[in-house]
Length: 154
Image (cartoon, rainbow, N blue to C red; front, side, top):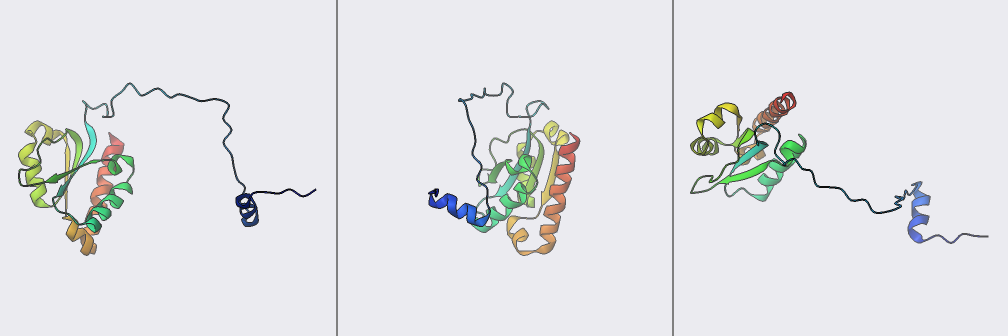
């Protein structure tokens, strides 16, 4: 008696792949968490990234990949662009990552002194420099490692 398998299953078996199937007896509902998305340190978000306005797609892709490489806290960090009117409303965070001196100055203008003294503010090169310079990439990597160590301690 020959078994007639669908094409997909035959191909998977030919490649040596064992297909797994999820066995579900019923539907499960997951309640939404009662705690807010901010961490416990006074309603702060873990990290905020300050970028210059008008970054190219390559620059934004490079920054996004670098941030995702250091885990969910930096990968999901809020990203703000400095425009002509400044930053606008800046969330209170445990750490700020400013790409370029102009962005760090804009952040300094918007944040109260108490928030600045409590937060870790890291200045790295502008995304255009990170894209073209190996030294700037090294400095970005070291800054992200420092942020990761600080967030692990907290």
